[in-house]
Amino acid sequence: MPRVAIQGELGAFSHEAALRMVPEATIVPCALSADVFAALSSGQVDAAVVPIENSLAGSVMEHFDLLLQHDLVILEESLLRIRHNLIALEGVELDQLQEVYSHPVALAQCRQFFARHPGIRASAFYDTAGSVKHLAEQNLLRAGAIASSHAAQAYGARILAAGIEDNPQNYTRFFRLSRRTEAQPVADANKLSLVFSVENRPGSLVVALQQIAGQGTNLTKIESRPVHGRPWEYIFYVDCQLSSPEAADLALAALEPHCAMVRELGRYREAMLP
Image (cartoon, rainbow, N blue to C red; front, top):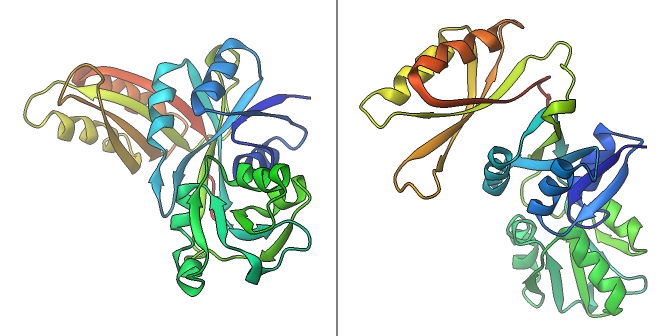
């Protein structure tokens, strides 16, 4: 069975996303995102599944930087509905809780719950599923956690309240990554991710974007990141929908004369909202 690395503990949202994309996978949890990318680059695992963007919280900037640092390629994207649940150990009731642990992003997405329960303190933890694991390991009877239903199952806890997130239109986009040397072309790919840099002169970014648009591609996302060690210089990550299989090659070729650097990150099928 393929070994797939994720950041976080078993039961994390990344675990759920990985099993959706690779149902037969053996999940390899990693403490840090850098460990996920290093494990895949070194051959310790066969693939990695990482979150790249949340519909409410925005992009995971660290993962953009790590994509550029490693010779990996995007094979697939997936959209996962993020449903936050209040979880506690068996026998613990809501009125007993004094503290709730979770990742800071999850806590921020459940502000209305804490407003309704001012006696419960929100405490930041390194991982959603890790917060449930913490309850179980420490046998905490006055604390809860916010995480996925998979996390509750993984650590023998129970859900006190389901779907406590403020906004139900909460989705995270995940990438499945492979080593570039082992990646096979994706049939019917209709989306392209790439990164490029431009010369520091007036209009250079506009010209680069015009080259992409001129090939019949539809720009769906652009993200700028600073170039480390070169203040006030930037690289640009771009996602675009392809009008045809040939459009990706045409867009990359059109960019080359106008950019200091161009690198393809992956061609894959666009994920649609369920």
